[in-house]
Image (cartoon, rainbow, N blue to C red):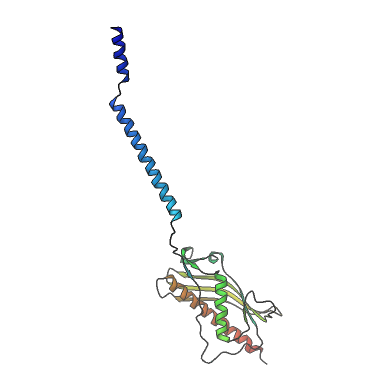
Length: 233
């Protein structure tokens, strides 16, 4: 009897609880699903690094927008004109295009960028415009080449140069014309120019900004013309 009892006890200890077995099966299945999910997530992350993403960046530049006057422009005579340096405020000293939303808030476009530093772009187009006005080969952009003697320098500090939420392109600048030999200040002005933006695209905004540079160039040319005429005997 004792041996049979021992056998029954041993047999009962070897029996598997069906509920316990089900729980283990569910846990194993959950682990498999969890591992598959992690693998899928990691595969997605790796594919985002290895799959080339389209470049959505658009690049812009200012353009010369002036034409020579029909009546012609006087020569600069013995004036050699140095354009620059052009200084821009820190908030514009970036690749991205900036839109003024209000007097104290701006939007910066990550996908719309200047193709070259804005101060260089501004100075280049300004010098191009002045060349169109005067048809002179004595107009040099800062920093001017070694060996070039500059008789008059145009020093420019841009205060504002951006599109606005009101669909305007605005340019504000302080500028001066200096006789380099004597360091004499011949003219000192503050200019504010605005142009409507004819369209809802960044290209239309840049086009309007180019027109403000054209207007600014015309004002500088008129002042230089006045100085040149005063130098005549």
